[in-house]
Image (cartoon, helix red, strand yellow):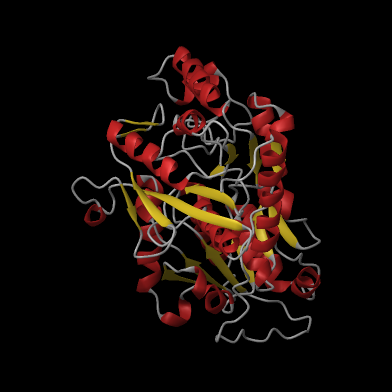
Length: 436
């Protein structure tokens, strides 16, 4: 009998873009192609899509697609990460009893509630539970980024006092209770996975057992294959390459404002023989200060003659447009101001033969080797980024040397293989057979 797997995803990538949901959907698509697996997707949706919230509806099908469902989350408590809607939990229980999965694989708890792990354990006691962390939300109440609200510096561990300093309106005891609440429900997970190894150390330091933590790299299908778009040729010569690209959300932790500040520094020094293409949206999620900075820069850029503009904002994109947009650049800049859990855009750049210039921390520094297959700069430092961009524009042979050493990005098939080994190991270890 096929192994029955339920994937639980934060949002559906066709409704709300994001790395975690894209990875979950890639996994769903790959497992659907395996003959020995029956896979189901339950993707959440919040009230940002009111037209999809019908009276009385709680779990619905999605757009007439087989085995794809939407969990219509509402009245969500973002502090305790639990639902305030009992009927949603009842519907979830009915859904579990209907699907009867052998494995439930959580790709997030946000919009679902951390306590749904315990619901799965109670309703399906023999079911194996896998949980993939895509950031540090269990550890960090500041959107899971582990960036200190006091000074914007990176945080390497949580404590009652340190967390209270970021949230001075909450006493230290609140953070102890929050951690106890999370640990109670995470105890129901059989195996945890992280897409980068440095993440594992953070969660072990926080208190999860190392022997329950596993590394599975995020994979995706190659969008460089099977497309009718032809990639512009890149001459195998020593000439510098001067076109840069940013791909991602336009909010604080993704660091697009660091790129714009670097552009201003280069322009002030008279360096104008380059161009930057900004690809992305969701500026509404940025802080007021960063949003206003981005808007002001782009407005000033539009006042210039086209020949004098150094930055173009191309707006949002979907994965099928990656080939076209990557084809217009030489370097992909990943200027994130948080650790990043994996930075899927690095894989996307490698997929199209584009070296990466990125911040020197976390998953970015784990994946990109400075001076070997990419270039690192001091996180959050526009001057350091400007210096690297100037070098990229002027140093003969640099682009070609780094390009020739680019790794092959993880495929979605290899990701699925990694998860299937975990699923089957758990099933065998528990001593039960897949559902008939």
